[in-house]
Amino acid sequence: MATEDQQGAPSVVDRYYTRWYKTDLKSKPCEDHCVLQHSNRICIITLAESHPILQNGRQIKSINYQISANCSRLQNKVSGKSKRGGQFLTELAPLCRIACTDGEEYTVFSCIRGRLLEVNEDILTNPSLLQEKPSTEGYIAVVLPKFEESKSVTQGLLTQMEYEDILSKRRSTNPEPC
Image 1 (cartoon, one colour):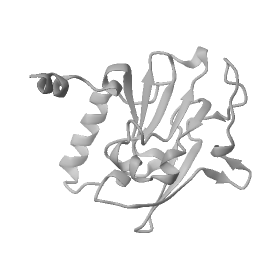
Image 2 (cartoon, helix red, strand yellow):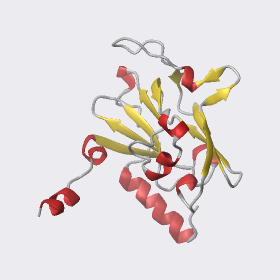
Image 3 (tube, one colour):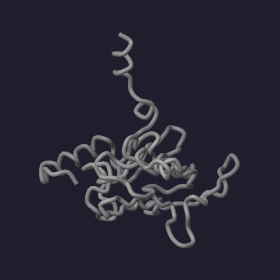
Image 4 (cartoon, one colour):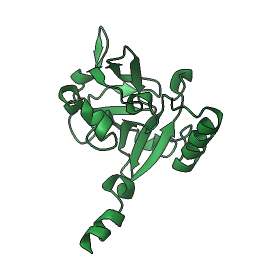
């Protein structure tokens, strides 16, 4: 009886976070991202379930937080209550690049404006976390929107229902996964 209750209970992510989605980033089909927003404004950037990295049994070769010669997300350091020192991100700021063994490379973007609090260094040593647990241990980064922008930060993002509608439209026009 206890196992039935545990199976029916919502996960921590489902209970405490609101899922927001950004589809076809930079006009690249199916490169969808998910933003998990907590009631305390903190947002976790992850890959959406339909992202090509999570489809077709792809293998991740490498994950790189070095965005350019002068910018590495790994060098991000924050301190204090107001999280001073964190890199400021725009909606289309790249967070990392993920290379797959089939030669494909994907860039993961922030999707929201805010201060970068941390990146997930665990996926550097264990990239399979990104595929096995994308909403929990396999997250990409944690971003804190400005207080005055915390309500408007999700403008331009899709709700769970809107995202599922887009997925069903994709399936009806193209039965093959992305």
